[in-house]
Image (cartoon, rainbow, N blue to C red; front, top):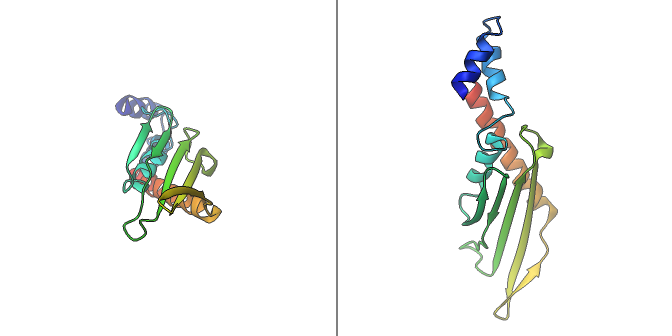
Amino acid sequence: MLGTATFALSACGGGNDERLQTDLAAARVTSIGVNSYLWRASLETLSFMPLTQADSNGGVLVTDWYASPDNPNERVKVSVAILDQDLRADALRVAASRQVLQGGTWVEAPVQAATVQRLEDIILTKARDLRRSAVG
């Protein structure tokens, strides 16, 4: 598919290799259904957590509950939705749930908005870095 796109774009004329690489890196169509840079960046960011769902066609990642070894009385669960084929900030939605252990029972606890925002920022930064390295 990439070879076909390269041939088709090179037939457009100009012979501008830099533009060709940029066009290929910015291509909206991916074989996984969503922006591949956002998908890979999301997987890398959440790689320390066990996944319960990973749908690359629909762009959904859901983790299982994860408790840090440093704080075993607190656990978090994260879901990521990639909403578009373009690499844009509004093409990514992260949600998180948090529970704390109280009296042997897991109890829902609030998640700071900054935590979700920080996860989104990390994913977007990684996705942009992946795109930059693909362009050259």
